[in-house]
View: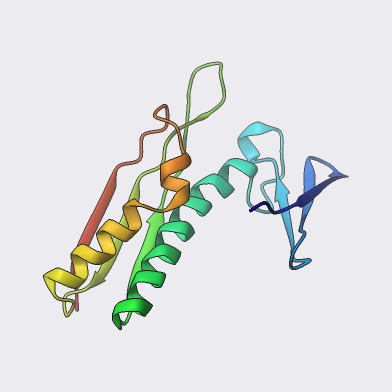
Length: 138
């Protein structure tokens, strides 16, 4: 399966992307630390966003299959860039928190689901992806 996304340069280091199937649009800006205005997600921010939202989406698929209420589960990601001359993402830590009411079986199902998301599996080994699960929310 393929999905076409068209990207147009809008000037001032801003791009507009159009999702072919839906027509939805997304703006990106260069970040403040790389000559941009930082008024929207940067392209590298989208990589971190993709990881977090993909993990939660795959967890949602599994949750729906097993009748698990995912409404209190949150994902937080951070994007860390290199400090050397080659600008690249070096680390995307992920914290997944959820309610203590979930059974250990439900927690395990959700953790396995998160770790099998396509974005996680697609990122190369040059990007560290430490993942933490905390099931103690009240």
